[in-house]
Length: 221
Length: 221
Image (cartoon, rainbow over all chains, first blue to last red; front, side):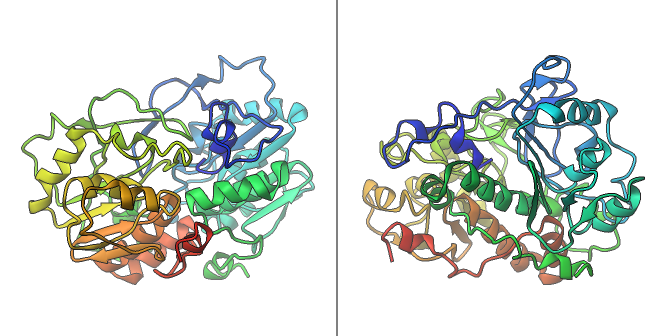
């Protein structure tokens, strides 16, 4: 969000002359099953802005599905993960995804311009059936559990990549890679002049797509 | 917080055997002037856990002071920034710091084991007088405004550094550099065996202290 927030309505990028103007203005919703604050594994609780019930009938242009052990509790609209922390021994990824979130992704997908997932958010997206026949990636610590935990074998999981693009679907590796994906997505949408200002303000050392030492760390490549 | 959260009480690192045990257990407070959710420049609102009034009389071991245009509204205990976004043209850094926050830092400082700041959080820490005679750094887009905006000239501002350590004071550059500082701080506290697990799960491509292209981008080095 440090990066994509600069595309938001009301952002300083819309009034400050150091920013080139762009043909996009994002309006963010942070959607969850209720409006109660959501505890995170790291950092303060966060407040959803809308419930899935409230956005029933709304077609979004872009959805960003975060991961974490809270995958079963929330999916956010263009909301990068606060934390994508995994209980790596207990294998808690499988089976905890809320049908509400999976159905939301499934129902939104045909009308989306872009679908993004960060970290284990790919598990949700895969469960919604929208990665069928596609290239995708996910958190490397959870990679094998996600790959073998799915009933489908028709997803081409790419182990060594900070993020993967296939058509309008963007999937990133573990949480930090989400910012590299956001950086590439911003560049794709509005070009490098705008993206460079954002990158330089938040001091993001952007990775290339293949700058992924973690596939090796987890024995995947 | 993606990194430091792993040192938290109740973290999976305390029960999952892939983590080496460590002699620290962090308890996090997120302190603000009221308990109302705080709007961020990017991402969902966040919920403070305590007010400055409530922690009056509590001596913390560690404080992490975030930045952002919300510097005047909150200071968090070991809370990394959600967003450290600056209105770079309007020069809004100067003059907006709440005396409550500055006094909190000033009063805590003599009893602290460590004082950390991220991004323009250094402006708050500098205003509290605790950087006198020290090396420090801050967000590179705001660097000159912070340096010349202070009444003191007795701080040695280092332009090219992801983070700077001087005694028990750790200051980082713009928001993303805060995670590099957190990574180095974790390594300093508990060693690389633990830090490596954390880094590999959140897939953080850790920078060295001098890996700072942004000093050049902003004409500082």
